[in-house]
Amino acid sequence: MAYRLAYDPDRAFLMIETKGFWTMDIFRSFEAELRPLLSRVRADHDRYRVLSDSLALEIQSKDVSSAFDRLMNDGLLAADEGPIAIVTDGVLKKMQAERGMRHLNVRFFTTVDDAMNWLFEAP
Image (cartoon, rainbow, N blue to C red; front, side, top):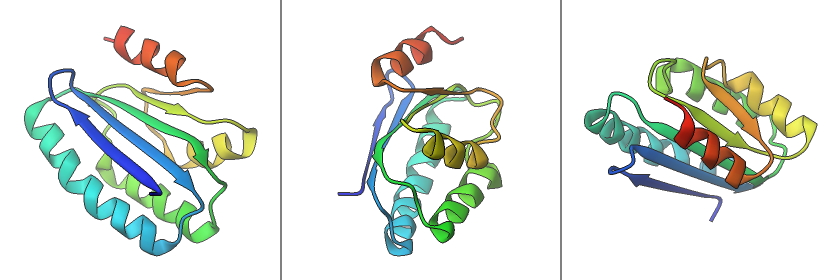
């Protein structure tokens, strides 16, 4: 599977794991699952934590990268809803992710452990 979404309501925690090289069909499926899940998270919590584990995600095509940018910047993840940790390796993948994340409380990490420590120490 190219992605996995998980929500822990007790910890106000949304986990997004992405892998591989995506087609637009994969992206549309991801978006169709993420939007209602995020609505549920928002209904449960004003503030929540997000971990995006993108270590196994490849550099994406311009179309998919642009679709990610639109998804993140159309208010899907608002600046006041909590910390977002993105785990990625490589400068190009980080740059691609940064373009799509104009969020005030985003941090980039190279390990899931470091990201989780930051997420659960953040106010």
